[in-house]
Amino acid sequence: MQQTDAGWSRETLDEAIGSGSLDRVLHWIGTTPSNSAAAEDADRVSSTKARDILIARAQVPLVIQGISSVLSKPVKSSGDFYTACAGLDSILSDLPLATLRLYRSGIEALAANTAYSPSGVSLPSLTNRAKDAIKFIDFPDLTWAPEHKMDYMAERSLSERVHTAEEMKPHARDLLGWLADYNWPPYSGCVKQLARFPEVAVDPIKEIIEDYRDDDPEWLLHLLDFVKESVPVGVLWEKLEPELSLLASSEASDEASDEASDEASDEASDEASDEASDEASDEASDEASDEASDEASDEASDEASDEENRHLAEAAQSMLRLLTEWKKKQVGKEQRGVPIR
Image 1 (cartoon, rainbow, N blue to C red):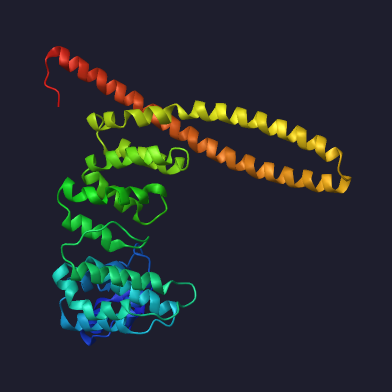
Image 2 (cartoon, rainbow, N blue to C red):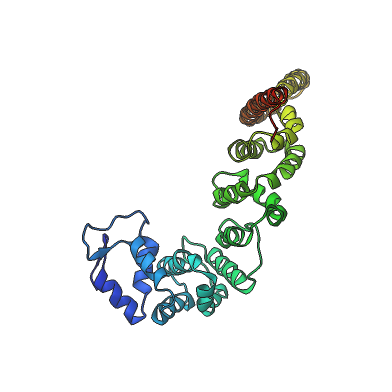
């Protein structure tokens, strides 16, 4: 078969699909960047185009046979892994539910694979995604927030099956949990789902700020970013005003706490110095070295924490200013007799 990095010829791809043997095609799709351009040849297709062709023909018996066969095979190498990933993640995860059901046996075989992972890849991660697909198939009304970092079917369940704020409400707290780290794969999908019904996120955000104000400033900053980008300034922001005021004043509070801590540390250091003078010189030297190392580590950690708290306070202050401006506009509307919405 004639295949190059630029793509397969259309004729060769059609032959592979017609034979029901899709191992090489799926391996190519799974190991080729999605933005890899095909040669400017009408007879040659890119991996992205090949994926689209397979999706369009997903109900064809030979395509069902070829992909199901790949999913049912042992995963003995990283190549096998990426081939199976292409079948599950690139093709099947985008199919309508009725078509996805046609592949249940192959997905079930992959979900049951308990072999050791080949070097450099995680087979349990892949089998978990297969189990998610089975859940999506077997429970057509079920909705859930992501339960692990690669739970793509969770977002699909919310996107396709949640249609009202009331239906989204039970998932809001779990979706907000994934906003703790920008680098987590579910982050953007969770933001997208929460933004559909931002009103359900406000009360959980209030609770999270109350519970984690002193523990996770980075997460709280991400939550404020979500509010600024996805929640219209207005009555929903007013609900958050007490928490924003608390965060806005936290920087000054933290600075006072740091000063008190520094004074206490200096006093303790002086006492330790007096005691050390009464001990053997080698023990005093070791202790001084350990203390210096600990202090340097603590200072670095404190500086990082201080910076995060400063950014959080600044974000809260900025939001309070925007809220104040909105309130002034509402007062002006009331004075002019304009209906408030």
